[in-house]
Length: 411
Image (cartoon, rainbow, N blue to C red; front, side, top):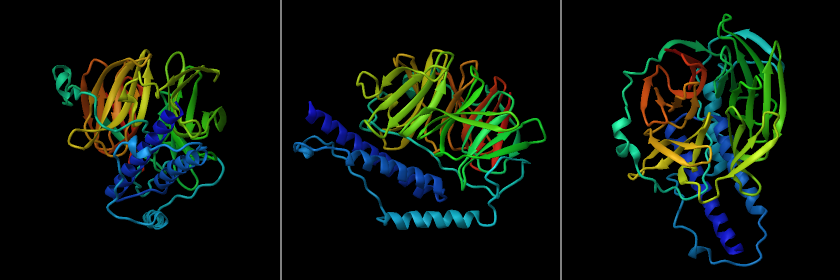
């Protein structure tokens, strides 16, 4: 029993290292980097190191007999400190004379233009081998899938310049809240219909990994690696930690009944979802290390829950070794309904749903997917690369781009 646990643990560590290696390759290919992305990689590596230091080895195991034949290969072997310093210097040069100063206190100003800054934040996890053993459903469901934008009525209405980059975004149906990583990180409350006024507030906690609007309690919920924070804005910001955490990965969603928190813990190697009531009491745990749950939960980038449907957005290796992403629909007991392939992506993906059960997926490119549980998929052409999404209502949504800009779409 202990030997099996040890074997599974080492396999999991190996999978995490493979994923980090892939993230580094993406950084190298993108050509433009952010300090925040390097910090994310550092956090993941530190989490692995912390877990390894906690191991208490009592017996020896012939690991070459049980560890899969994986390896991490980097074309350019570079000292980590030198690599990080080069990235930092590049970011500083790109931002020189263009960074907007703002104080450590709340500040309301009209939106102003700023030099664009590519955002490459992304967090994923692995808990099993990354091979693509699920069937490729692109052919099996071809009779009801569509890749044309002709039937999608959403079009870009306007583009809104922002004073800082947009990392995560959510909407209460009228205005929007977004986060921006920098020195310091900030929250920005943006009034869509009031002369584009933005109110900024320094974010004193670990960077926000995800943010949603929770209609039932009329609050924004921000997920950081040390917990969940509720955020309200009425002339000033009110921020309160409502759930404590110690995570290497976290995403958040909600439906009528519960708040759903997808997490990888730094201690205990837990990978799964904890459900909370709207008074923030723990109600239920879904453990993805349970082998009865399919591989569709591996390498998660984002997820959301709408009524009785759970949708996960995960990355897989295709048969020709390309990285592609899929949306997988399940019921709330994690019984798979179907997976829909969405092709390649550009390091920034997120999934959100509207009241009609349509799921919107950003790609990091000038394309926004609109998919349904039935298997139908269509896309909207955008003016900018799509990174993060907020649904205002069934006819309006906003898309955070890789520039200091929000694209406002209407149908």
